[in-house]
Length: 107
Image 1: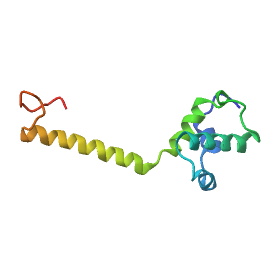
Image 2: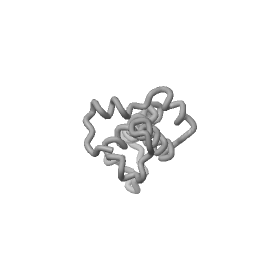
Image 3: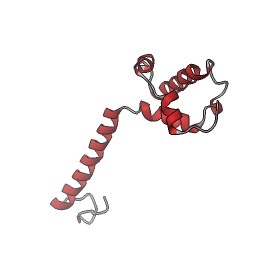
Image 4: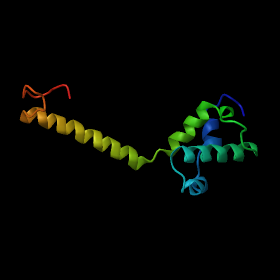
């Protein structure tokens, strides 16, 4: 497999289509990424790579970004927003866990 991939080639050869996602539906985490990489390599070259170092990092990154679930990212953003809002409310209301009893502004 070639080592350098431009974005057009990554899109053409390594974009996961609906049928690919159906195959990967019951996989999670690193197993899902590994299966996706093996699937796309097999589709491209007609054989599986012999070792993981044969798959360029740009290919791994491109495929991995397609597997990040959007709801997961949204939940993380909401969670972080709530934490920051809560910290702000503590500062505004003057509550603190600090031994001095003074509001903490460092978070």
